[in-house]
Image (tube, rainbow, N blue to C red; front, side, top):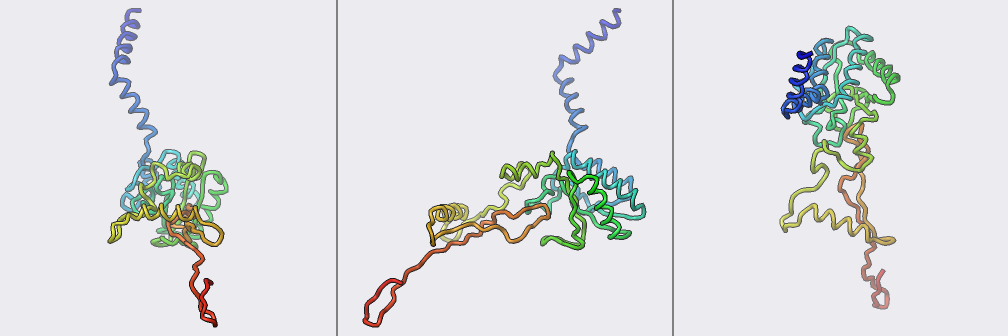
Length: 255
């Protein structure tokens, strides 16, 4: 009985110490930590490749997305054992200048290094049919996006935990969105701040009536397959301009 009491007392003293609790929290957090380690382990196990730390050169991969991507890679190996792929992008630095799922760690790009691209496309379609609420694929071998650096497949997590989706719904860029994205910076030779000019144009657009108006137009391209059109700070300002017009009798009236 005394041994049990001593054990309880010993554990109680540990719990009272702040560092003990702190270590438990750190250990549990490590299990859920957002990183690309598990994906890399899966790639190694399946003899797949990664292009020089592109999985997380720009930030972390969330656990919910990592689970889905690893599940797909294992499915791909089962369906096409002779295929070899290389992951060329994830939460990487290249995509920082775009409003993209990549910047939330919810998208990966990969190329087919060995085997049939068509077979991989079929496998992607098959996997998507099983995980339609979470998984999205864009075949950039056939339909490359405007900023594509080469043929590849783009896969992404679109499920209920998606921070990209939450960001779009709120109209905010989100914590993991590149700060200052899509905002004008700098001054002209007269010292006019471009962000201030942008606000002035917005005020002018709001005050316009009938034939005099202004508006910010949406981008006419989508830099990322997951991205919808967004304001690009290009303005169209239209107004009726009246100028004097001479008549035969020498009188002048506005036209």
